[in-house]
Length: 305
Image 1: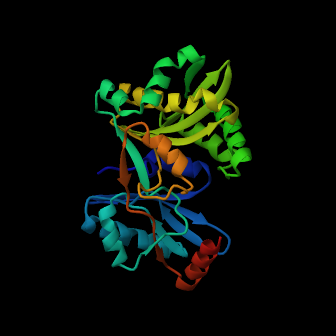
Image 2: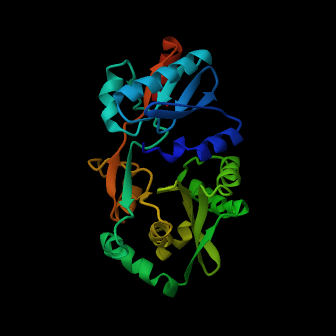
Image 3: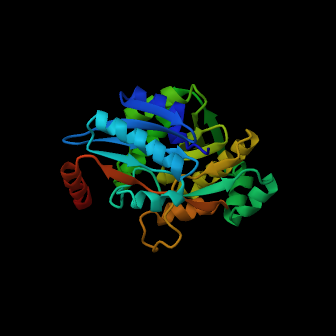
């Protein structure tokens, strides 16, 4: 079964480092890791990019197990995000509600097949990306790779600049610090960054499973846009992943291909697609209310937000 990184033991350890209670169960053809999350007035059992199941029968068994846990811990609702889009009809017919107001994880992504030759990977990129990568050293750019948790401060400085410029609200510093302290020593995540004249101008945290690299979090200094450090870094990270024997590079989230030009993700979706990958659609997020009245109040509130 093709388990997503957010269902891995490494991700579970990271969630536990944040003080969250997790549950891992498995059976014939299915497995899941779920997180118990409590908020003000409601709670949920959340299964990020899971459960993993080989068919509908296995999915049914996994859901039965999740429902038992949800009842035991008296949660308001259960949320799952199966990666298999074929499960959508099953969920719809079994009283699950599609989440349209708030998706914790992207339903669409773009994935690069690293089993292709290096020449093929290079030719599939846009001409601009090829030229930038071939000539980045001449432009004064240097690429760095670190598995030292202390170096996450480089990323934090840059993501703070993005937040100040755009108004976006990233995870707090503790989230990323715990992530680096937990995942970096396991080899499950690391930091890539680019410097220009010894100044970090863009940095990215990647997650690595045995076969897939995920482009997880990135921050860039807008004062160095002309250097195009982000383009150079993505190209380097995908070739580095190929050299390490990984099979796929998941760019982690794009707008649907038929989205309007003013879609909030249009800009970075165009950027990600310029590296020659293929779009992949997952099953989306689905909720099963365990306390219908409380859930409806929660959903109404989230929709109004």
